[in-house]
Amino acid sequence: MTIQPRTLILIGVLLLSLVTVETGGLFLVRVGRGLVPANTLQKNFFRAGHAHAAVLLVLSVAILGVIDAARLPFALDLVARYGVPAAALLMPAGFFLSVLGKEPQRPNRLMALLWVGAVALTLGLLSAGVGLVVAGIRAS
Image (cartoon, rainbow, N blue to C red; front, side, top):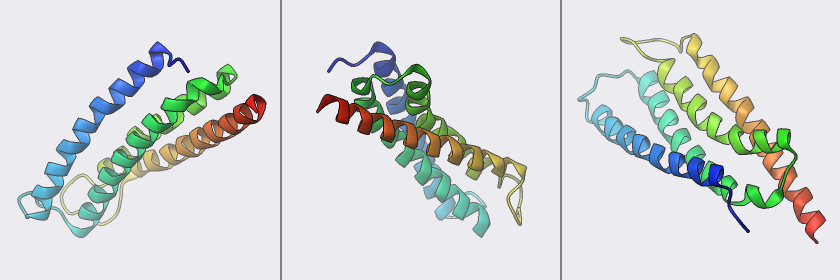
């Protein structure tokens, strides 16, 4: 199996993006120690954003590692290739940005980013999963 150059570039960018997740971990340690003031809502959303970022970036790398072999139609390939990485940006952004400010009592309108990310995640997973299953059936 040959991996396309655009796939190698995207995987590299995703791996480099994990450094920001690492930095986010340091931020969470500071929040946990009380060095950064945050209410319970903020703490919970910061943790969720951090976790989603890490898991979705790693999931993106796993999907990209096999998607080239499937040789999907262009539109399906586009969604399968970029849906989960888009979710890896949108969902954590929704968690973090929706609780900025001093003592928010509920998430603000930027919470919509979480839901847009969830749609991107669902479409990306469906496209990649169906595409890989069909490719496997064709190859057998």
